Length: 335
Ligand code: COA
Image 1 (cartoon, rainbow, N blue to C red):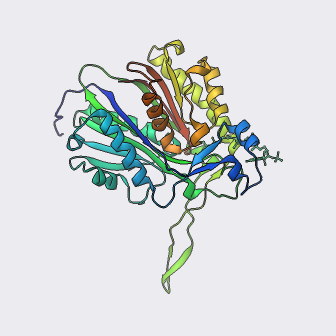
Image 2: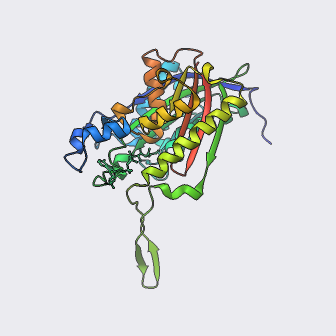
Image 3: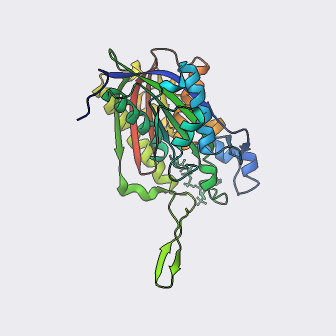
């Protein structure tokens, strides 16, 4: 077995960054396309508007901009970055978009790859990167969550098109040898319930030559059973967070911020109620951005860090959940 280079036991959080496209789509504007209203969307979801990528903003571009601002906050020499993980379900290149971000950054000493776990993707990528750092071979990692779901939405389906938007966020994390600011984590999937939320492939049969056929590549728009996804989230997220708090010996009073995947304000409030975490500790920006899939957690975190809501040593209970079905939780100390 290869020997590890460093004796590392944990990670610390050094920087955050985010990026959203300029183009804003309001509820009012969506109601020009499908039979809905600002009042309906706001009262059922908490969302007022979302950002939509135009031709200049694909996942690679958005992820790059978020990563760069996180690296700037960390004040790192780009050449010292060892690892870049891009959580996305909508890569600009199905073979992977992380190496293109690596190249744009000039992070010539890093290895970069994509990870797909839908709206849990960022959390899964953060935990994955932390394991590499704790393993002792890498010291500095950039974890990016970026998605462009607007390209995969059926804009005639009022049950789903109101929810999603585009964006990116990133964290810069570093190995430590005397403490661990990723206090604890847990991850789950349940493929049995996978049909509640899909962005499925759509393959048509075609012929290569007379007697050899093949399937063309492509995807159908997002298909969602909103009620089942809602029930899944309000049931599983409090359970996984409660278990994590117990495992790490933290009571919910010790949590400074509850940072959930930004899917629906009613989900955020319900999880907060079940964990007895008051509303003022629940971070939310989905009014402005809707559900940006893998981007929501780092996008929210970056906003809260830059406006000084999240301060050094604050305890953040975070949970991502979504298609797969997949869900996970992490307890983080910022800094
Ligand atoms: N505007 C107006 N009416 C709408 C509508 C819209 N955008 N979308 C659905 N409706 C209608 C339905 O057609 C239905 O009408 P009917 O009773 O005449 O059939 C009615 O509103 C209720 O539909 P329902 O699906 O029960 O609404 P809901 O209260 O469950 O809210 C969601 C729908 C999608 C907002 C909600 O289920 C949700 O947020 N689920 C979680 C989805 C999610 O977070 N997905 C991503 C996870 S990562």
